Length: 177
Image (tube, rainbow, N blue to C red; front, side):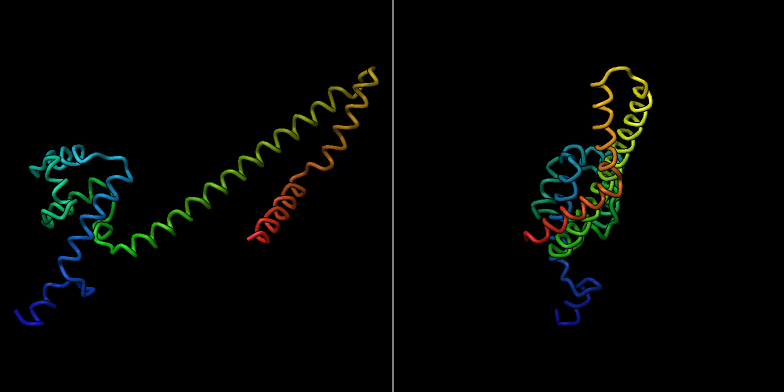
């Protein structure tokens, strides 16, 4: 076999087939485990789609003892609900892509927490307004004193003030790096 034959066996990106098979095995395990799926479950799903797989088949593939045919690979990708090429990424590509996806998840989670906090603040403000209205004509001095305290607290508990406080805390956190 000469260099041209070796190049013909390599992938479009020049990756030797053996390396692609190693990446497939590692990625299959990583994706399956990240979804909380067992080898037995995957084997059952493959069998249900016409591929006579058993748990041992999955184990052998993930351990690099068995290669996967293209049709099998496409079916695995479909079952795992990932693009086929996701199962052939290199280790560094998986790491970098996972980092980006994790950052997206953290950003969405933080945004959602802020949205929840805004909703909670608005609900507390609504409740405070209602309490002030309901207690406006109270004949009790202690109630009137408490109302003044509530009015002062409401003046300091606005959304803009909360955002400014959050920004100040962020600057302090960042300065601590």
